[in-house]
Length: 374
Image 1 (cartoon, rainbow, N blue to C red):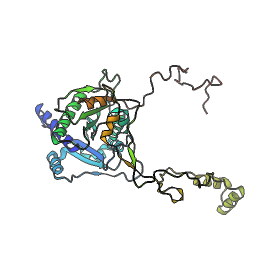
Image 2: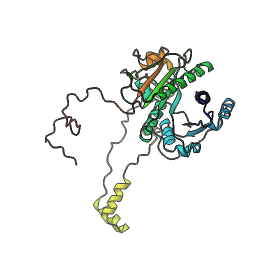
Image 3: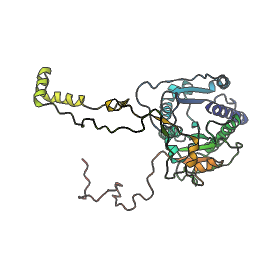
Image 4: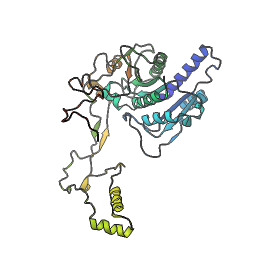
């Protein structure tokens, strides 16, 4: 959906400039598109670590995409980053002018993550969403770098997985552009759906909407106390159960070097025993490099699991009337305000005594009245 959405966004911006009598007629429009280089669904707000996170210019392969890119010209810049969605957003913010030299001397007016293929509603799916992960990362960077920057996560809800037509996509893109323009014009919002400053709006648009003017409502995530159904299935060739590792030797900590061995090593290296002991401790430290386990101890083959999530499984989930999930299912465009923070339960500390000056809530009464920090 990305190409269709960018095309619609570009044409709407250009038409609005022309209609307003702008002298440049949209010649100063610049849309900077940066996406993960590979499929990154279900990764949440995970950040990519390590070396070799390559960013490069994107060139379309499909003929229709080539024509679309050519029609928009230099007004739309395309980049890919070999990282997670949140990593992509982070690099785009911190190194915007390095990624997009054409943007030098400019500032960002809006950040849009998406559109995602599939809804991002409810607490379970929203926490797992790479689209919302990128939006949250962008919003956190925006709070430290901008005083006013609208950030959105956009998702198109599917009635049937991988089934839609061109008109449905066009209508959803038109609806998205209209909703984002409305929200951005009055950012930040304080209303019945959001009593604090909004960091991110999650906009879920049903792809089955009949026209771009379908009802749009403020709503909250469906935080029902259930998760999504099982996402993984055991492959047929895998063992149905894993044997208990009865033959494994007991775990034991490595013995420290003896005093005599340290002394001999010190004499051979012409250094003090303290220095040798320090080197022994440093060499014994465990690194944080990930280890890939390919087989069980003793040569036993491990189990293999496959991601098998299907849209039909959504039918088994509870939908609270008025929630974002319920609204999308019933044909509404759902707009959910988010803050970039974790929330603790209401009244979690009501029965706890506290030091009003430091806002410390002891789990139990301390033996001494003074709080000593070591």
